[in-house]
Amino acid sequence: MALMRIQKYLSERGICSRREAERLLQQGLIKVNGQVLRTLGAKVDPIKDKVEVDQRHVSGGPQKLYIKLHKPVGYVSSNPQAGEKEARTLIPLKERLYNVGRLDKDSSGLLLFTNDGVFAYRLTHPAFEHEKEYEVLLDRSVPSEEIARMSAGLPMLGKRTQPCRITRLGPRTLRFILREGMNRQIRRMCEKVGRRVLSLKRLRMHRFTLGNLPSGDWVHLPARQVQALLAEKAA
Image (tube, rainbow, N blue to C red):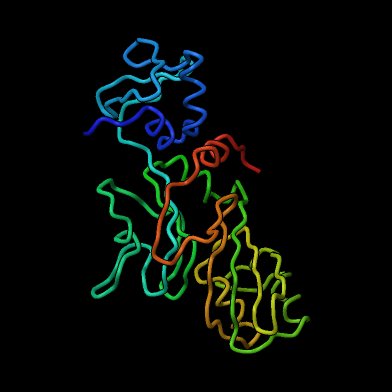
């Protein structure tokens, strides 16, 4: 594997930002193969070198990656069938990555990928009760009393949906904020009140937002956000 600047190496592993890495270098808190490193432009071998930050061993094993993608409509999150396009193919990296949660073929928006099982667990396990935010366009307007019905919870797939927050953004546009993720939940909820979803876009998963990322594009997640998630406790 090619050598990598120490700042980039630590950032992509979610240890710290590149600017924070420079501060740690200046303070003599980074060691490579047992030697204190102080050179800002120094490079490391991500596989062979032993890297320590403030006496913590952080190297070894595959590089940890945390990526957000603006999934377009028409791509499946995983397990494509014949003729289907998989969202992972939009990220031109050779490392094995897994989607964090699902986003169905007819929906667009934020989809996260990682090779860090701890990160995926912390973001998706129900014990952490993380919010997911969506913008939904319906075929026709929905009365306030029906919004209240959906917000309170509806019977679905043998259980009842948890209460959620629904805000009206326009005559036919709603914002949903959920803490669960049943299969095609929002579409099924809208069907329960006689409405059909024309478009559904995920804007946020917990602290990770889609922002102005163009459709089909991807970026690495900020290291500080990754570390903040990994430090959280269950609700």
